[in-house]
Length: 357
Image (cartoon, rainbow, N blue to C red):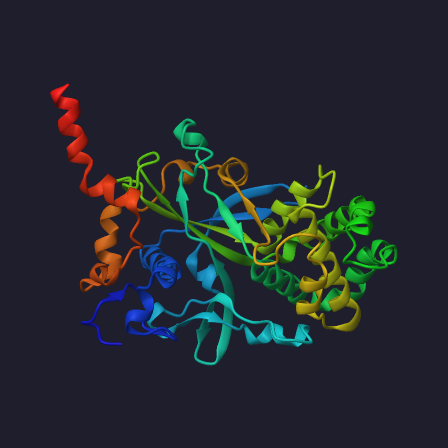
């Protein structure tokens, strides 16, 4: 990569090149990695969401070194986007497909990460006081399948215990694609997964990179002094979000479906060493479309992410000039929307009318 061409801070080696970084869908994962590299080199930790022994999501700080699982400098790392984390392939009969980011050093696979760039506040919280703002996060099936694989990998030396925890409810379910059977065994599924998390919470790992960009209320304008920050969810904390949301379900919901899928994957891997992920996700559609696992609006995520850093993100807007380099902003091509065009180019027409009144 030429140091003079448009580029993003900290990304020297990648399976993306040139214009690949700047497309609408690509930039939403390229920029977060660059932001993480910037924070890393400026010794700014991310906020880390984990669970404790009481199954509560708690926040602390985590270095980007720990997130990337290396102390090698950014210049020595490879950031492969939408790539397969090969060490997990041993736990699946079929293809595990790609995850948003795979961090590598030479041929060493260091960390698989999902990336969710989210705006603060969202539609459900912008009317609330600023310290109650939250971001919506949409989780796809690849996120929960990779988190299950990572959890299994972390527990690989204790598969007999994992099996023993989940087997009592597994034996009661004849057909995992049945809404009736999943609902009838809801309490057993959740109890097994809660017991599993209590037993193994000490092995949780960073999994989901959630950068937030904060605007001035509902407007698209960035907050000048508190524009960006990064929250990192552990694999156990992400699961906690859908487990908590399953507890009061009176029918099968997307959250309960995600819980049941997790239980089945962990049981299959702990018993046979592998799971057939595609079959599990297809068979267990349970009346919902399969392209989205679940979503959490800002009111829900706020209770997990609540911190001073959510109210006042650590990175100011001016850092953009150090992150997007060599005129890279000119490569951006935002989607044209009529309401957005009026907001930015025609607002003065209405201001003139208001002044004349």
